[in-house]
Length: 132
Image (tube, rainbow, N blue to C red; front, side, top):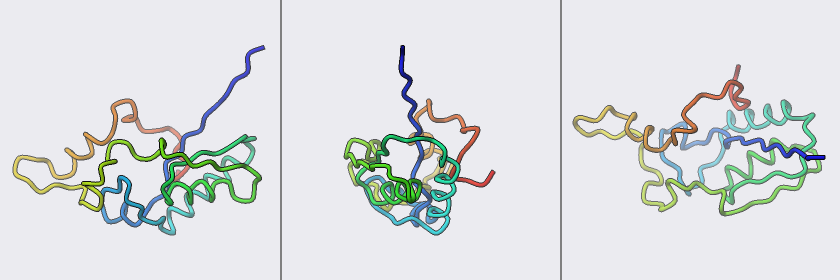
């Protein structure tokens, strides 16, 4: 009999730098109240899922998000550097504004297009971290 393993991927909660429109990469901006609340809501929505384990990057914003989702449940949380941001890992853009102000560029769209892989471009139908 084949066993099925299901993965649930959840982005970290909203951070201070998200609100300021700044690139984070490996910079570690803390979760905002909205980010904490969103993670807690995700935890409630996923309450009935019998998770064996949770994994996050080694960045505090992702660990905090996972801990808020896990809540009081006895689910081990493992951190792994391989789950850290990959595209912005050099640190050269940490804290820079997402919008570029250069002639002939459409403000923020250029940065957003190059930082979002095509496979991730579709909007999820049920984003647990935002109001429905």
